[in-house]
Length: 116
Image 1 (cartoon, rainbow, N blue to C red):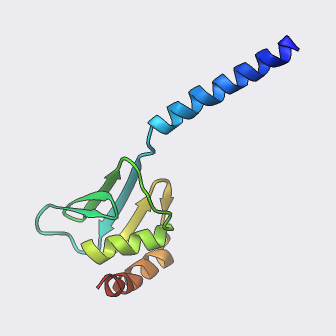
Image 2 (image 1 turned 120 degrees about the vertical axis):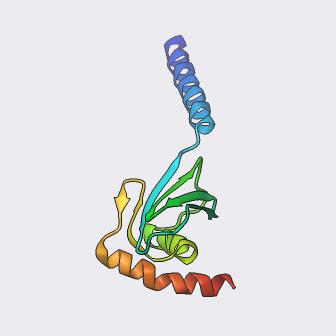
């Protein structure tokens, strides 16, 4: 019986310690976009809690955590609605295909209309 209690206590401690460490470390968001037309001056915008910094045609998005569950194309549309059309978009390890980029750029107008 004492052996079972020790196993239970060890498992509970592992969950508590692991769970609290997990909760204390927010997941970082990183995104990259290549603008179809380079910006003439560096620019910084906050889009859906992500800080996007653009220099020329290269944009990088960074956030300590990302609150929504948007798919990569929908996320791209929000970026395009603010920064302009893109020729490439990456969110974490996912890079959009040429077809997804077309859908992103075309759908950005819907995002702007919905926001008004």
